[in-house]
Image (cartoon, rainbow, N blue to C red; front, side):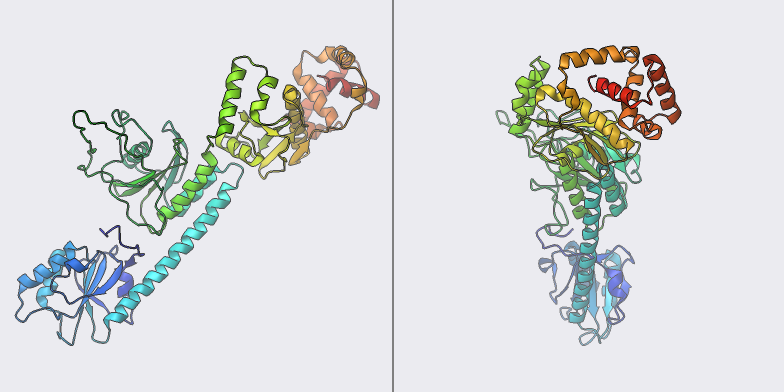
Length: 544
């Protein structure tokens, strides 16, 4: 394992170096493992190179350090020290010191499993080092390009109307694995990609629990107080960026399958350990990683991949940051005021008396329906509220209702159909709710992204409200007991008698609309083709 304090370099596959025809390198001993990688090249003629190696090097030597008459014992000790230091491979230069690679060195490398490369006389060590750095530069460029493309793809997914699943889908595609979002109660809110094996899936669930704060003296049942043994966790600064480190520090030194437990001495005050913000593990060949979202709200992003490649952590970090924005709730004085208003309303305080806690005097009610057939999930509704500039969101079935301060402009949003009420005071919120519902129905019927309820003075304002309400009740009495008839008549009149658009607005068949309108005409004993009758009925329907 490389020293985590060493500046990270992208790994280069040894096979890529052997494929360079200009170098003419040849493997003559050691395992032919396609997964062997090197992190840099270093030339040394020290008999014991251990103190000068950091791990992952291709060590280059011309054998100057080999004494005359050296036997197998010398080469065994030499190779064992390279392996102990974490060296990835040994390159031996033929000529001018040795005409061939010593046979005892070949046998020692074969025994210790260290790849041994023969460097021909025409190839200098500086040429080998230059080739390594060229391959590293190519790998770094490919890695940065992959991360950049993934970042753009994830950002585009986060801008969609229902961003949660698209972000997870893009992440799973970019990592060629499985990605899931865990709720604070450890349930899976959404997932995408081929699921990991059951054992790895359970291990990943346990890993997500390690990122949730817990009482140090009473760990949750079935979950460790810290990350599982063998896992790795990042510090309080969050997921490690590409430039910090490619290896995470060990969380526990316990044996595999055991959890590290610290026993306090009598009288000692045991403080809760800091909760890691990310952790990783490998189970049954599946690489697992978990990322805590936000600042302690309990959402966790989990990732399982069959392979771990450079840039994976950075891509997952981008997704974690986007999901934090999508799931986060700001705990501020504003949130406290909203909570206070809710408590007072539950205790019976009239809405006008608590409206001042919400920070605005006049409000728009917005009704929204997403494109497609699926109803909006809570996270999509929260994202809608964020886009509208309000946290007062109610995902009521297929429609999302949002209270928006009047000084916040309501504009069309991709993927949503919006109906907006006039700006009203809190005591008129019920009327605004009705206005927004009707505006949304007309917007859907006319396939308009946004439709606002008209706020100019109407003819009905010239009639005293009491008289207008009495007239409306009397006129609509024959159909008042059947809400489907009144709703159909109202929608049909608002859409100028269009059967098709009324059917779309009400989500019924056009023949159903015709039957209901005919029933209304019969019960009201009125000619609905008469514009005067329509005007009078519209006047009455606006009072209900």
